[in-house]
Image 1 (spheres, rainbow, N blue to C red):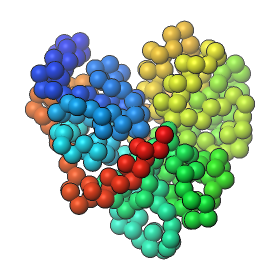
Image 2 (tube, protein in one colour):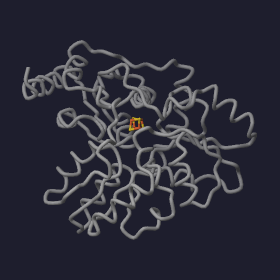
Image 3 (tube, rainbow, N blue to C red):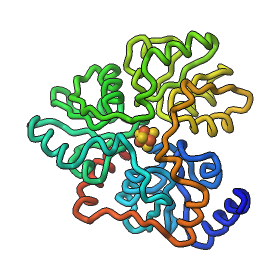
Image 4 (cartoon, rainbow, N blue to C red):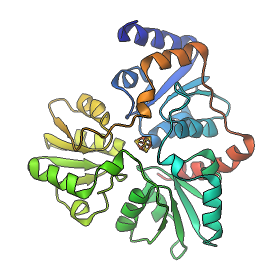
Length: 308
Ligand code: SF4
């Protein structure tokens, strides 16, 4: 079947089944194009909380579908590829975090949304790259803060807030490919361009990047927002490659250059348009979180959603 025909069947089935498709910016362009809502982790979490549909088809990786299920336990949350994981999320377990907390009594735990439900159930606050700085700034001064799992995002927040959080040493295998020398080289190559850099990028917290006059550090949604509003015509994009699909659609006439062509998240690409159709037709694969973990994990997620 052609992509166009599959997309039309998906659109019809969404209505028939009272379903909404939520898709992350890192999914394949044809998947993004059938989404009822396209967003980054924070936007998708908010939409999962607001959606009135009976079924949510979550086009993203497993921890994202889990988060949607925690927020909306009365809805059927489906993930089209059951094995879509995340290197960052897998770098820490609930047991790891419990042991780390025990070694730092009195510490406040902030966990990035890229974590399992089990990890979230051991955390005090959750955050995404869109609101991480605001979440950390809202914490009482003088208390130690433990940040899991992304060392790059954590180091970036430490730099911009002046906090000295303890950092877990996890990373995203895609954004880890973007160290400062790569970003600086690209800036030299394109002297008229602004570089949009995700805070998970390895080079985001390097002073040469952080204080560069042509660098904007932002979440995926923040990058799109910046490119829409700015008068600059050319951008270097330092995040997952597929983000350029929405950037180009949102900003006609502007040019987007990947900082590195290999920044591709293979896990997100497991969500194919055929699998989205299968998920809707067969109502598979349902993601559910055990009640005991869900109730505990809901608390830090709600705190994240409450931070403006
Ligand atoms: S891009 Fe990185 S953080 Fe995002 S899902 Fe893929 S591996 Fe995880």
